[in-house]
Length: 133
Image (cartoon, rainbow, N blue to C red; front, side):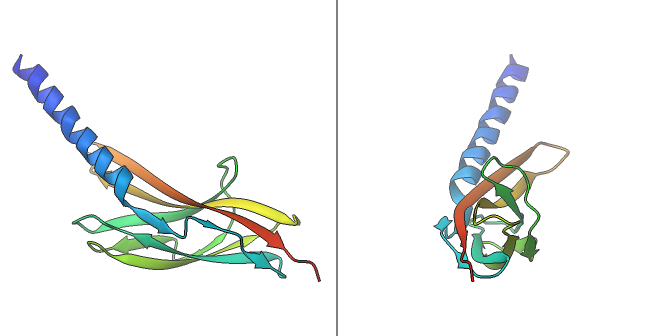
């Protein structure tokens, strides 16, 4: 019986962490429609860490079907202190298209390998237009 109670308590702690992590981290702006005359477009996002401990976030770019997109991200990893924010510049190529829909995401990994890990992700949606010359 005590094993069952401790297992349930562990699940409750994990669910509490999951609810807190999923509801709190941020990326701003969440939407945008950049326009560019170049062969690529740039978006500046701000990643936020609302937690009481320092956290590391990776910024990644995906297409509308969540396949990874080759993009220049500076910096690709943001280590943020408690309640910290960090500006990140993302440059995405049009790859010959007139319009490009991408998701720019901040992903965090919480917990330790010894206990359990929780991966979080929050994304902004962007529809870029290549303005011809």
